[in-house]
Length: 217
Image (cartoon, helix red, strand yellow):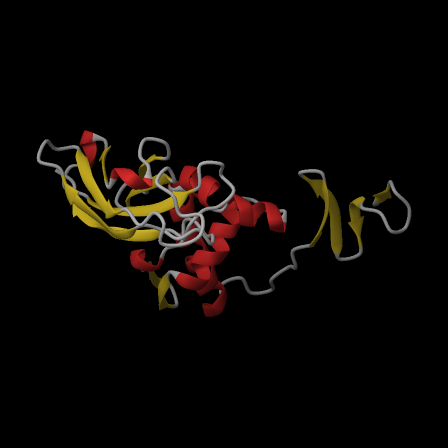
């Protein structure tokens, strides 16, 4: 039974027919009740589960970066950043068909916004090992609001470990170079670097881009 706290036009908590009312971050939310699937092992159902499982595992491995990169979208839709990342990457980054699906890491989305990113981001393994050298071209002044002290955001993802390491604070657009360390246990694994840029006041963020891949040493 649902309880209506603010009159007939207000939000409600509980079940009414085929929907459930609740609150999230102070907002009233209504969601549909999951329908019973008579044959949950059809080819279509298995394909859908394979896609969702693939993307969910990936999002879990980059959760900290996603929380920063997709926060504005999540707040505007009153859902979590993980839910936004799952939806975007299901639509954008999954390749293959049926249960034979994989991620196209060049199409992965970890942040979304209208702040221009940096030019020519690149990554290379550092000679000292257990770290990567990151480079880019400072394009401050190329567009409205693009300034030297925009904060650089880095995420280094390891598909073999389904884990990531990141840096959201150490570098700014004007630096044009940074070093990002990773665990020594990652030696031999292929790593993918994602780069985004955020304004110092956190009001704007850029789309993420894959700067490249390296083999950990």
